[in-house]
Image 1 (tube, rainbow, N blue to C red):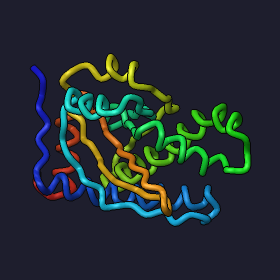
Image 2 (cartoon, rainbow, N blue to C red):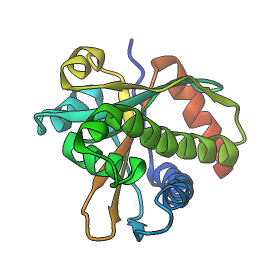
Image 3 (cartoon, rainbow, N blue to C red):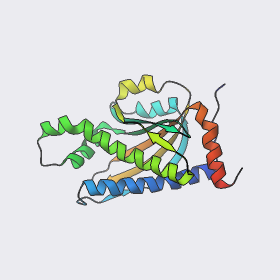
Length: 201
């Protein structure tokens, strides 16, 4: 029997606060990479609970979407996903790599740059999560997936805690999101940990 995860207002509030700190750390890291040449801002993260099928509906809105997937384990287990339309990924990659190199070079280095950017966002979010909730969480090496692989990988009814935070780099309107895929065995544990922090148990 599949366990359904239920997030109340208190849960979403505390997660939004945690992810807000993580986003702040991510933006700080990106600012260092770009040499503070570009103003980077972000909106307050919005936390929502969706199923994998609902997530795929979002993915299908884009012909091509770059997803950076990073497995995590410890007191909670699952996968963290940083995703954005591939065109936005190219713009981020150019900022990360530098604009003083040829288009051919950008094309070759683009995947590595996008993976590193996704790694920054994911690790900042997970670091804030483990620190705030006082739990041990370890991550594996991230990998990139594209639309065709995601369709099969995301099959199932597991729930996803989705973080929506829009960020912009100066005059470029770039939008990215993070989703946490919780394995069924981790759902009750995750809720219990948050409830302990809230003093609800």
